[in-house]
Image (cartoon, rainbow, N blue to C red):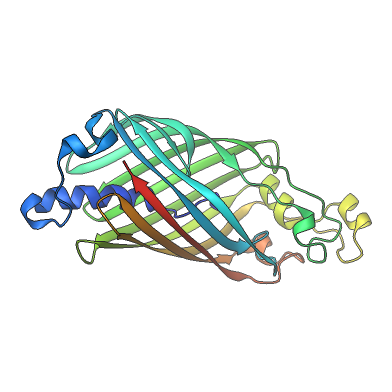
Length: 276
């Protein structure tokens, strides 16, 4: 359910951790010793910029037995540790943020809710029509202690599925070597009736247009749970390779939907990112 457009749910966290860890170990112990005068935007003390490209292989819709491959841009730009534009949440700002030993943040953003095209799976989505992509308002809170990070995100779409979703996750990311960072992030997601009816329900008009499905009302509730595994390999001081795989298990009315072929499914993301 996550935006789905994410190349790696915790890619920015891992990228940030790479620099922080190297700094903590000290220049004499890190293979990525650098001269700040040669680090491009790192010398613009107010900016952090990472860009790249990623490929995503995932179901065309949650639980549907038809997959697609998308090539997507990866962007993570932050200004003065407060304003950001990134692939995960969109354009936003931290309303409250602490970088002490006990780190926490509260923020808001305008993001992007991916839609669904019936043409991507004519048989599996017979008669169900499209769900339009749209903007969404996002509120989030984060708490980080050491390698452990807990996140709560609430998103409300304006158009498209027009629903509200809530996701709670608790992740750990840590270095295995000076170059390789790995993370694991269990999550659980809630969705209101508008969201579940859009993705898992069948309305009267959809049933009339479909030779496959009868009417099905999907109510709100816990929609899914799962776990995401990610790895970031520092190829050079600036270049990183990112890979992420997640397993999602549907719950409640989402699981029981006649549209759903796979109650549990995997998604895989791979990409390369350059940090200036």
